[in-house]
Length: 323
Image (cartoon, rainbow, N blue to C red):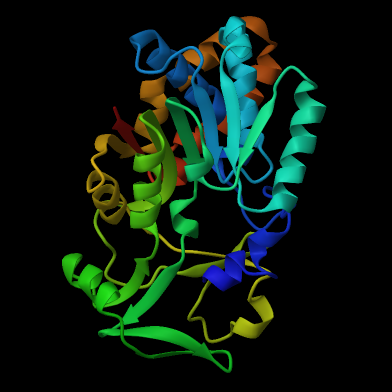
């Protein structure tokens, strides 16, 4: 999976559109109010004193940079003076994507915002940081497990004949005899804990707190979902040119971060998280300033984010603090 997504010819190695022109949608591509609500939460944390007015607001795995840009736009609307003191950055391992992000921010903000770039969280020099990520844990590499054996690919087929004590240790912990075992959560949490003194980390993804007892790994192509074990799926045809993902085991995420001393302060559905952070309050402000037609358009987009049968229950938010 690591080679599929991040190899020299991997899916994320070059810029890929998200939304109608891409392979899949995200909350970011659904509505600007997703980022706006996070901006409102940042203001609350500044007012509470956890974040300083000169904190670094940093997105991890920003793709085009839309989410961070939406956060900045709403911060400007709600409290413009903070744009003079806050820092804004993106952690992005690929230089080609950094170039896209720089271009987008230049077109959007000119020289008002100085975007900082990092290849890894360990490069950050900041004592107080707010990290935001959307759909990153499902993009971590994983091992495929079936009855104590892990899979490998041979001639376009997945064969389960390898052994891994580390994978089996996690499998037994979460009572799994098949499915995905994520790789890298522990090292990611360790790097974040050791690099910044005081921070909050918020992430949205799809999955559950309880580990699934089956395979969820799948390919997204042109908004179509294809299970990896579909008989009609030809691995050599989709390898590296489609997105591949799986449901997140949030218990694994939680354990990885708590083992490094971080505190899990909230785990909630996207519906609960966005409503508690004030997305409905932002819609009320919008209603006062725009025509009914524009308001209804934005309301319909927000409904996709919070309706239980759409993104509201399927996606979860998890939030950690240190310091």
